[in-house]
Image 1 (cartoon, chains in turn yellow, red):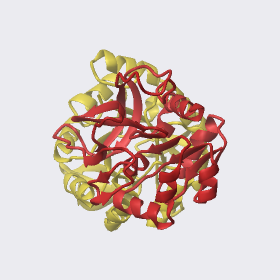
Image 2 (image 1 turned 60 degrees about the horizontal axis):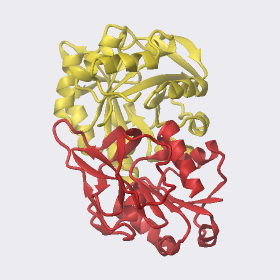
Image 3 (image 1 turned 180 degrees about the horizontal axis):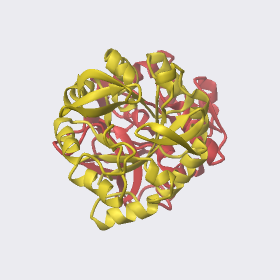
Amino acid sequence: MLAKRIIPCLDIKDGATVKGVNFLDLQSVGDPVELGRKYAMEGADELVYLDISATSEGRNTFTDLVSRIAENINIPFTVGGGIATLDDAARLLTAGADKVTINSAAVRRPELIDEIASRYGNQFVVVAIDAKTINGVWTVTTHGGKQLSERELFIWAHEAQERGAGEILFTSMDHDGTKNGYPCETYARLCDDLSIPVIASGGAGSVEDIADVLTKGKADAALAASIFHYGEIPIPVLKQALLEKNINVRI
Amino acid sequence: MIAVIDYKCGNLRSVGNALHRIGAEYQITSDPAVIRSASHVILPGVGEASSTMRALQKDGLDQVVLSLTQPVLGICIGMQLMCRYSEEGDVNCLGIFDTDVRKLPGSDTLKIPHIGWNTVQPLPVETRHALSLQTGLPDETYFYYVHSFAPAICEQTTAITGYGVPFSAILQNGNFFGTQFHPEKSGEAGEIMLKNFMKL
């Protein structure tokens, strides 16, 4: 039986792992490779590395770090941040990334999803969507939540799927970093709408939050950062607790 | 020395890194002479079946694979290319495994691609090699999958996984082995399996 995935997210800025509250007020929380290896040994199912500074500052992604991660980590990992072209994706594949997430560039030019998916397969393309509610409408944002787009979450997620996305990584900018839980109703609707897996991101503060998004929210995977980085909920403790709630996870 | 076949279709680096982590000597190569003289051969792959099959045929590497007598391990699309036929791109493949690759059915609750860790159930086949890929791995061990197509179960299936339907998780025909999952990405369990392959 397919297990629900627990995915620590490592936000990278200038080569270090950081996690901020609502993407601001960044605090350094450790070496990306060492932290990733620790999580893999503790039972993380995948890792996500996001270069959160890349898009804003127009920097290219962090190929050297990706190579070091690939050498040292024995579970799948996804990288993202500032991927704007097929060449960017190709370089990261060559460096050893298992998947790429594209975000702002796909909002700007949706054909990028088709291009990467048709060249490297749907499984290689994770479309990350950051959205927040504006007057009750889930509005897609870009550039780490700094800019509003004209796209609506559910319509955009469906378009991304049709263009070849293999997974959707949805972060609620209203919840990210707050530890107040995930918007489960929104996730449930998204998961019902889509035929590809949905990774829930942003807002986990407790075991119950993660259990909720995997059951009520119907998400296929839960991604979190702060609770792992600060050792608040170690992965083995989380997985054991989920198993006790009859949620199928890999122990 | 393990030859990892380079046919420009896949995450060769991740297979190489996994072999490095378990202390295996390997070479990523498209040279038929190097492939033929290797003690073990791995056919990796990421991508779409018809285009990867064409890439394999482009430099005659399909014929090289067919001629090999040492242990050969196909991973994911590499395994699928070793089957008779794939629905993905309607393409005839190498025919080493006597089965066809079909799209997974999926459903409202079973998302496609099948992504993540799923359990692998060995079949009770006592006549197989005493030493197999699965030595030392308990039943229902989790391995990492990323795919939308899978080989149907056949005589050569040595382990199955269920995702809506059961499919071939591991295939074996003589010196040819294949895994639909990615041992190179399956943590400790995957490393045990790759070490088992090296011992064949």
